[in-house]
Amino acid sequence: MQSQKKYKPSFSIEFFPPKTEEGKIKLCNTREELAQLNPAYFSVTYGAGGSTQQGTLDTVLEIKQAGCNAAPHLTCIGSSKQGVRDLLQTYIDNDIRRIVALRGDMPSGTHDMGELRYANELVEFIRAETGDHFHIEVAAYPEFHPQAKSAEADLVNFKRKVDAGANSAITQYFYNADAYFRFVDDCERLGLDIPIVPGIMPITNYKNLARFSDMCGAEIPRWLRKRLEDFGDDAASLRAFGRQVSTQLAKDLLEQGAPGLHFYSMNQADSTQAIWRELQLTN
Image (tube, rainbow, N blue to C red; front, top):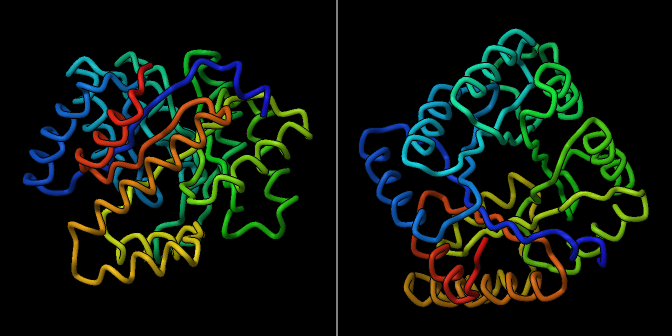
């Protein structure tokens, strides 16, 4: 883990593009609250097959116009090179300097994988088209991508993204710090030397967390599942306990050399705000 300590810590926050007017107003209020923390950037997710492309673009431009740094997610599966090229140019025209480059998921009912099938191909394409304009983030999976054939295959796939030109990585969320540090050690063994920033998912709702985790392959340790189940309908106590768990995890990661934190806010301000201030994070 020594090589990760040399990087200046970066603390950032993720949003998803709202689909309703009410959601837009709520996100605007959330963003204004969280902007007071001075995050390095706000990232904005991108739906399967680019299904929220316009929402992502609109949200990113609103964040930029509000004076904050924004990083759009960009997925490639099911997309054309020209479509990606046009979107990159739009971001360049609006002085967006950071992109989260992902493979993404196929939209349901379609089978055309498009011209760029994997995240490493997308990273390579962005570099070829735009040079060093963008700081490119890629995804990392300390507990392995749910579709990976093996742990080693997952590492090789991550190496492809780094070799293609990624500047840094954000991990899927996790609640087992050992999995993150083992992943970093494995990356160093392969000679990969970029910041790998752990993703933090504050715990606010057990049913939602269990559903997300089942979909993305993130493990909720058995002891944590049992404790969360015990709260039943006591939402306030669950949130308080979840905040305690997430804060301690974030603290342990930073103390052992993690180069920052990336918060999956779920468009909510309270938990991210509380953890951030408890740990006195500064970019």
